[in-house]
Amino acid sequence: MKKLFTLCAAIVMGCMAASAQTDNTFQFVDKDGNVVADGTTWHAYEKENDIFYGTIIPSGLYVKNTTSETANCSLDFQVTQISGSRFLICYPKNCTSNSGVTEVISTGTGEQLANESKDLQAEWVVKPFGADAETTGTCTVTLQLKVMQQIEGTFQYEIKAYGPKITVVFHNDGTTDGISGAEAAGGKEPVAYYSVDGRRLGVAQKGLNIVKYADGTTAKVVVR
Image (cartoon, rainbow, N blue to C red):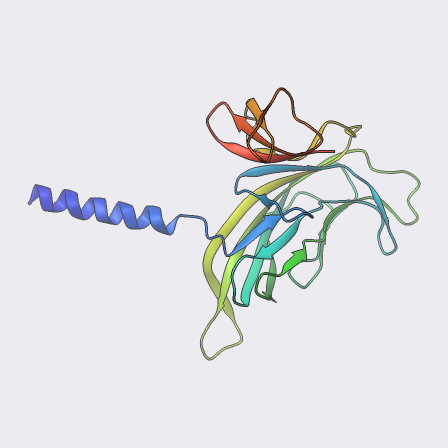
């Protein structure tokens, strides 16, 4: 009986672990299509002038449907730190903005075609039209993708699975050089750099690098 109980417990734990796995139907990618992995911290600091909002720092991120079928996606976001002005996101179809720290907010559900990449349109507005000066500091936001499915016989949707979760840090604090883009979450220590074809590098080079961290994980890092 004890062996049977142990076996059943192992099966249950295995099922729980499987259900907790990240669903990669949708993935965060950069402008070149490189996957930004689950758990990544992504840094953005390049400013643009937007005809609607003023001076912004866009995330530079997109969401890709990695499957060969149309699928429904939603996204949860949470502003955990913001120096001023407001954070704006327009994915998957509606725009939402916040000027302060928030609870987790869902952006609603939208359809995305097979293999389609959509601009996340996540940006920190550092100088709205009419403002005298730019907001300085940083804005930190967590983003989590969700795969949605329509409830039969209704126009409502429910969560089918959770996708990748990342943190985006927008900088207007003097950070303008060095590594931008992705780094492993938690500030882990890099121990080696590699080119995309596997050659070990002494230091990170301009362009796409593969960074290995002390805990054995790796991440794609873009050097501007």
